[in-house]
Length: 150
Image (tube, rainbow, N blue to C red; front, side, top):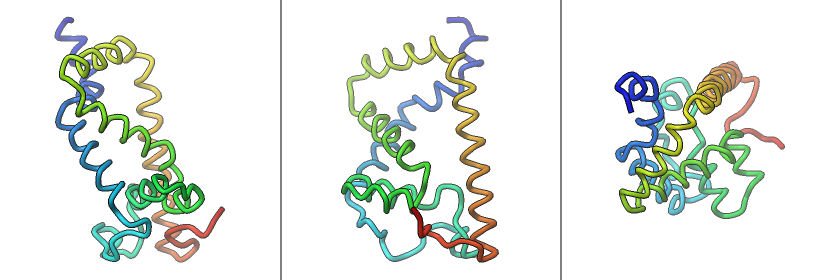
């Protein structure tokens, strides 16, 4: 594979890199052992200083609730969680597979990188826009965190 192609798909190689996969594995274990309502302390700087959630606030508690079958409560913590959490778990499992399997998965997705890139960036933008809207509405007291719906 040429250097130009490697650089063009660097985002995918980083996402499927061993360090990122290991972080997903650790995050998956944390989601499985964490109580569904959290630890009782805020670790998010946005939550501590502004009393409003950052774009990622609630993902761990969402995963904890999903692991326990509490799907409605999971969605209240983070509506993107039911999609993001299984993806993180799959990447975490990939981290513990043999290296040759990880390399095969990487090459499989790099061959499809042109199709995946718009989906990747669309998800990043949607996540950021959702986070900004949620932060604003919670900061100004228009909604609560976690949400009281559905």
